[in-house]
Amino acid sequence: MTQATATQTFTPTFTKLVSKEGGVEYPLEARYVCEETFSPLEVAYDYEAIRRQVSREKIQAGPNSIWRYKAFLPVATDNVIDVGTGMTPLVKSTRLARRLGLKNLYIKNDAVNMPTLSFKDRVVSVALSRARELGFTTVSCSSTGNLANSTAALAAYAGLDCCVFIPADLEAGKILGTLIYNPTVIAVKGNYDQVNRLCSEIANTYDWGFVNINLRPYYSEGSKTLGFEVAEQLGWKLPDHIVAPLASGSLYTKIYKGFQEFIKVGLVDDKTVRFSGAQAEGCSPIATAFSEGRDFIKPVKPNTIAKSLAIGNPADAVYALDIARKTGGQVESVNDTEIIEGIKLLAETEGIFTETAGGTTIAVLKKLVEARKIDPEETTVVYITGNGLKTQEAVSGYIGEPLTIEPKLESFERALERSRTLERLEWQQVLV
Amino acid sequence: MSVLVLIPPALQKFTNNQAKFECSAGNVNDLISVLEDECPGIKSRLCNESGQIRQFVNFYVNSEDIRFLEGAETALKDGDEVSIVPAVAGG
Image 1 (cartoon, rainbow over the protein chains, first blue to last red):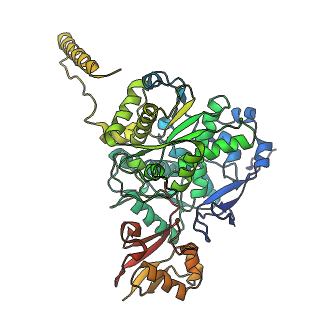
Image 2 (image 1 turned 90 degrees about the vertical axis):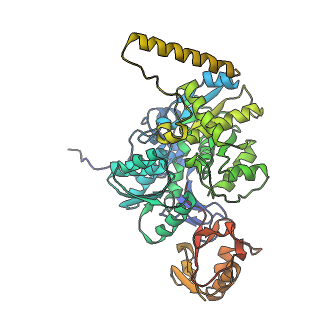
Image 3 (image 1 turned 180 degrees about the horizontal axis):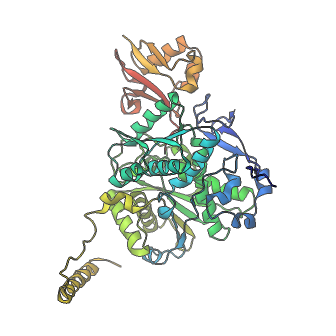
């Protein structure tokens, strides 16, 4: 009889943690900061080993989730958390593209990522898989909302204890969407940067796996899958230009790393992809540093409806600035009114309801097109990272209302006529 | 006068593995000098060659980032809490 033990079916490819400044090496533990330079630690891989393990065919035959790219992710066992996260649609835009005057626009739609409707499910799936390998029984995070949703949901799935920290003033949908999984939720009276600082102190004394603190080197690798998937979904080609939101800068830098890794192991042809980033004016330390030609940021106190991007002291800003400059991209910011218009524009043209971060990204895309920073012919991918149902407060009051009628045909006809008249008036105001 | 300094694990080898350190200092710059006197070697981790606080090191005085105060000149008074935190978490 064959023994049903967990037989390892692959060889891990990650080899060590390396500091991004100075190259100091560390073992593959729960640690995130270089003791000599204080700089972040990054997971290093044996790319020859990856090259031997992967091919386009093998990846395509793998799971319909981020785990088809397991050879590029920092997990050591087969026992990964796979609830179908990733492989979200890459939509070829027609109506938004036409509205903006672009011919090859694609939308990477993580508003429908599983299980909690944001890109955070990617990073948390990796972080909690690694947390189990490292022996943690309690997981935690500092979050602007989406990360708390995802950590709580996936901890529930994995049977891990969970304690999440959020700013007390988050959107109701993000708080409820965490509480439902029954973690301990600590609402801190302060902004995200204060929550994050507090969690860094707590992580020093509690033996918990904080996904975006002591597990951050592993966690952040999950965002590479947003690069891998786009390359695969474009037919194993890299795009010409991407536009992504910037909060800590981690997502943006890891999409870049994902593209570079695919080039390195020969899955796609080498090419420079321009990286553009989107921030909200009310929290734009990276966009400001970019426009002022600085390679460091000055922290800000956020004041924007884009709460999921409201990080005034972004950890990966210096690396995001470097990528934007060396790839010939742009970092732009838009105000809250433009963000709301961005949310509505994507909804009305593509049927995708995104949250404020997505509204920011669409509004920056529009701004870049208007400033002729995007060539209409180039293949542009815009990353939509979260779902609008979680930030309803941002748009309520700026959208229509239902036409309430009596249950009579005549009442319906009157309401319809009234709405058509209003629509005609609106059309006269739109310059298309 | 005395201020309480919270030391992150990455620096605790300089403080005999202590997470808290009490000392007297007039401002953050003084504090770094006092720390160096008491825990030799710690300054080179906190500051670069030109003596500026490294970009990946954040100082907070009573929970406020010193970059919103007077930077390294931020004055300290009796009972203040200074927290040193690596700037590479979150997001």
